Image 1 (cartoon, rainbow, N blue to C red):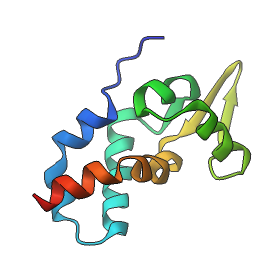
Image 2: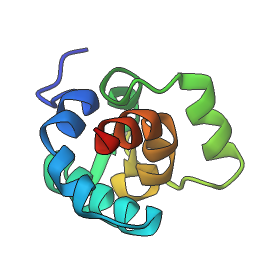
Image 3: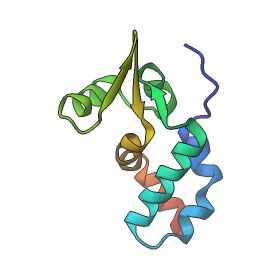
Length: 103
């Protein structure tokens, strides 16, 4: 399945200066939430998430089933709010954000 979304690694590498300015982890999460909403929109298809965010499908299903991430079903398509994905993306790419900020 093809989509027009940039990879999250490229997005984070291009915006490392904004994360360097953040002092706490909460500030970084807020900036990441704004960045994801600006780039990917408020909602993203469930089928786009594994390839765009490099998150395994079974990990995503676990968070959906444990009520950590809410879904919206429209017809046959399932959407997820990008703000709900922020914590999951931050935990997956924390090493990229933290290591690059120290340099």
